[in-house]
Image (tube, rainbow, N blue to C red; front, side, top):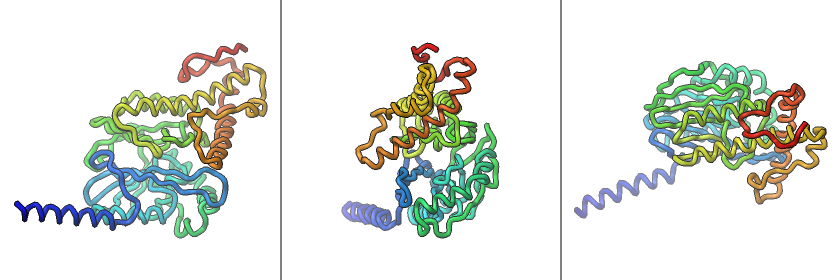
Length: 331
């Protein structure tokens, strides 16, 4: 009995030492065969908010698939070393859920097939040269050493079924949402939704290439799946948490719609509406520089929403149903 206990202790200790010696990043297991890495890279070239990505690793064996590998080749190389150390795993394929630089520029580290929607591939082709230059300026040339653009070569279609890491995943394409094309991977058997940039944690949503009403529709589509688990950007929602996180994202987007609609009802211009614009305390942070970055991002989001809502308002279209009851201000 004593020998058995000693042997077990040595085995556990050996595994523990190996885990401690493995290089960063560490992987957080959400479910067997589904792990995440939350990455955050501070801007060195501007006052913009830090770049954030949640990378998802699918699979438990020697072959894994990586979803949204990160912003630089060096980040991708570090993930490869970590995976090899922890589970002797090699990456056999990549999936890009959308065309933001933080998610896709690490493609260069892997030399494996890259999959995405047709819309994401087209957006990457159009924007990645500018995104690479901006990321190099933002993070610094040393951080971007060796990073090059690797475009997806395999197109994923809406409704397509993929067998990855011992699970069946259905591809869901959300068009004109957070970006021109967002990909959701849905495992119906366990109720797991990988939603990419459609849902954030505590980070302020960024309304850049997408459309606010399309994003709201995408959130409704995710809600209709009734997921038990949802993995977004810096976000892992378990049973009982998903609805609250979806509602938080929906509330922010609907506030952009409501602010624009009410300002137009009141006869205000864009500039006048921005003068009184306030960011909800729900999105406040303690650090002054981060709060200022959020304030600027909120203004940008509001301007994007204004441009989308104004034609609807001018055409006397109905208040968007996704945002509940209409404001009380009359026209």
